[in-house]
Length: 246
Picture 1 (tube, rainbow, N blue to C red):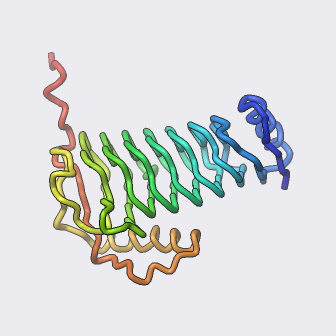
Picture 2: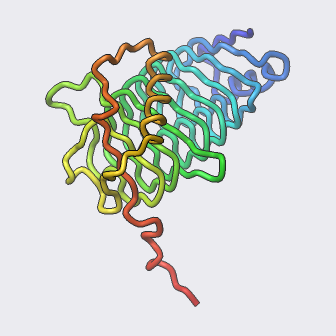
Picture 3: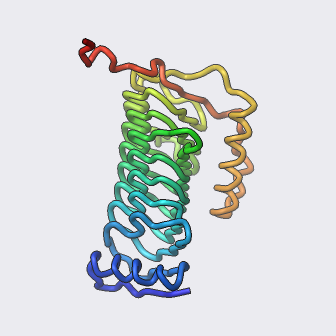
């Protein structure tokens, strides 16, 4: 395992060091990360990064099968258009997490910002998943076209809301699972609560919640699958009237 001290290292130089190191050592530990961008972009399956600090925007962009574990918070656009792989964040994460994500899994121990899961999509065997332990900002699941987002809503005070406003706005595919049932006004008109929670939904939730519990060493004895609500798109082609047909 190779260790790279990133203190005061420019992001381009750091990414070059990572690229060169991957050729001989697939397990790399990065220390003293302070906002360097594009860490792990396009990383292949053989790579595994452990990051100590706060990675900057677009970490794991277009990632193609690697594993990244962050011991700290992460900034915006993490997992941008990633194809395969897994990201684990022992902290909070910023806006547009999983932007246009096409595959793989992202687990965030704490809270996330705005527009998480925007433009998520799926294709054949590629079904991306985001699991968030805390709360989210506005536009959660905006323009989702596929995949799944699970929001656990853990450790909230009585004055905190699990989601912001406009959840699922523009959604036309995929599914959102929420631990509870927020007020209807918080959702976009393109999404609706489903009354059909299947046995497959239950197995899916248990699988990813169990991984969350194990990964972040949580007990979660009070977390009940029965308390989750499921939200899906009202229309799978809501923008057809915006285009001309000849």
